Length: 251
Length: 377
Image (cartoon, rainbow over the protein chains, first blue to last red):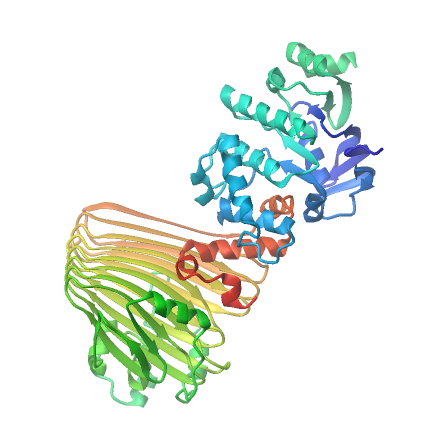
């Protein structure tokens, strides 16, 4: 049976430069697959390519969701298939309230033509419950999307969406960056919650501290667009002790 | 100039606006469209009241529907004949051709007064017609009176129609007025001027949404004449299709410790043009005033155009606060990609952003109307 997400021999160019040089990995339901690597190793390129960002040109290889290639689909058609990306630094969008945005994405998934009036009012209760679960105040709903949000609020708001839209595969791009210890613990709790709910989680990070709270099933190390090591959580611990270069040399 | 013009020929000699009606030395209004329609015959037929007006009528204590005549039901406010042409010109601070055309061809004018210490929720609807329509409202809000004013300004019928709509408001001491204003102009070229004069400690709050026609000129002036008077304007403007909108929001501080907050958000798409200007003028006697101007425009297509100009003109050395900011920006690829990862297409993203800009004023929410319903899309 096909896994939730499979990436095969993926080569990607961005503005003419080859960034990913043949990446293979997969993640299945109920698993956390961590992709680690130093800055500039191609981790965010991998996330953007999976989501279908314009300008991220797939030279060769494939990306399959439940065995079906998604390479020909534009970004807005990949999301409804069950892919979700929590951004490292989501853009601030002036003029759009967070509540309006959440209603739009819920309605879109329910096939409503009107994106502004909540099609299923029961979803409002769910939003309030999730706000509490991720530790955000209700007042964020009336604020413009990510305008003036703190780093922690952004991460929590991204996690809220991941829980709200019920995707099959959740890609988390540096969900712990810029957070204090309590923030990291909270994000780890939410990742565990996604795993327990059977989601396939691709966890991108360059700093192993998150693994004090989340035990990944698989760890893949990416450097300069290539996979240089793969293992379990012991590999993450080795990275913390010796650094990326040492791990890569051993591999 | 008021009172010196008597014939149509005299009016033709008057320019549409004074050279440099703002420090930016530019004409932002598409006066050509007004010029082309100046000779439109008087309207014979008027648009039907939209169904949501009936709902608004039920919510208010008083209403006036202006078309060729006035349909009215009032209990709290008092109505009387409109002032003379010269008085209207003086009240609105006539400066250009459209002001004089307006008083000469006025279809209907009405004077509305809310007595001292009274409270009212007043709906005023100005309906456009199939030719030229001109409406004027003189409003006087008595000492300590409290008015909730809903203003609806609708375009008329056909692509040759023209409308002028002016309002002059006097807020006596300690009066409080909250204005919720919706302007939707369709195919009609509309010239709008609203001038409010505030006495001591009077308070004015204006929430406005402008959805423009082929040429929409909106000028809202608040003269803060009295000590401690204040105005807060929160406006949204949408320019779509081939619309051309020029919105000019002025706060003129004349009284000590007066306060103004002028904020506006606008969006233009398709081949439309939008100009948002917010101006605070602090005169020399207006010491210890606070003024804040904040205007932002969003361009949503490759062929749309927009500007946003905040201006402060300060003639006194003593101000408590004077602040302005502005931006014009287009939709970023990173924003579109983010929204796409949530399943929203480019068109969805544009609708969301338009709705956000319209929602900034809060007008649709307060009136219980959806943008989609209003724009028929």
